[in-house]
Image 1 (cartoon, helix red, strand yellow):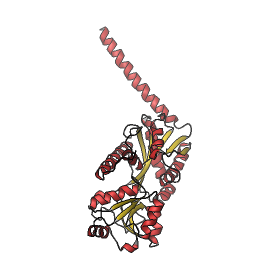
Image 2 (cartoon, helix red, strand yellow; image 1 turned 60 degrees about the vertical axis):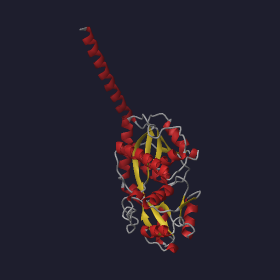
Image 3 (cartoon, helix red, strand yellow; image 1 turned 90 degrees about the vertical axis):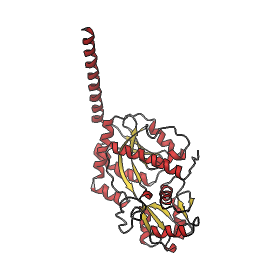
Image 4 (tube, one colour; image 1 turned 45 degrees about the vertical axis):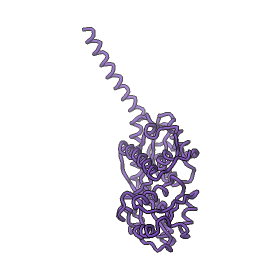
Amino acid sequence: MTSVRALRGAVASAVLMIFSQAVAVDAVADTWPSRPISAISAVSAGNAGDTIARIVLDQVSKQIGQSFVLENRPGGGGTIGTASVAKAEPDGYTVLLLTSSQSSYVVLHKTLSYDPFRDFAPAALFGVQPSVLVAAPSKGWKSVADLVAAAKAKPGALNFASAGLGSASHWAAERLRLATGINVQHIPFRGPVEAFTEVMTGRVDFYYLPITPALPNIREGKIVALAVSTPQRAPALPDVQTVAEAGYPDAEYLFWGGLAFPAKTPRAIVERLHAETNKALAVPAVRERLTQLGVLPKPMGVDEFTTFFHNEITSTVKLAKDINLVPTN
């Protein structure tokens, strides 16, 4: 009898503890945020990801009554800023500007001081940006088929530019190379400006770049758009086919940005930021500004975004293995 009473008492205590913890979590979410939130960018200031984040977070700030303090912590090939968030207190007051570049950090480094799968709680996705496959008008190409035909006519003769090893322009072009089976050479540059300049002059054969800087040059006839990397056509370039429409769905590549907390941040806070971000993305003024930057909406729940992020890393690791990319440090 005593053991039965003891068991009942233990069960009651456990239930009370679980209930108390649930109440405590809800209370944290109800009072969050009570002070400014640090938003950490792992790259240098002035990048496209920061611009998009500022547009969205400025609106979120108005909704929650607290500001986001954007801080750039570059270094270590993006790992220093990322690691600082992984090791931050999971109290909802430090958030990482999560981007597709996180996958590159995994494959470009032999070891990391954090675990990208376990140390973050992805919260919200801002959207995706198409990359545009371009070439100089002097090449005479009008489509992906033209490029592929030229490459197969002279194996190893053509080349492509990138803004650096592991950059979005590098991954997009490598996916195209593998999907089409063409033999072309990679020429990495120190940044997008140098790469783009060489392509416009025709000294380099093709290049993937974000849609925003590409648009004025396409409209002025300085470059020719052959395809976009996203599954859907870009509204700003409705007449330009996707790589899937060109016959190469495996060549699709998404550049994306969003937010992630340190792991163990209360789920209620994660869900709150997710809801507030989606609310901000639905504001017409925000939506218009993001559209001008070529950002396409891609709504996801918290769990779906987490799976998406993990799959992106896995996919990039496989791609790096397929192209025999060796970590640099």
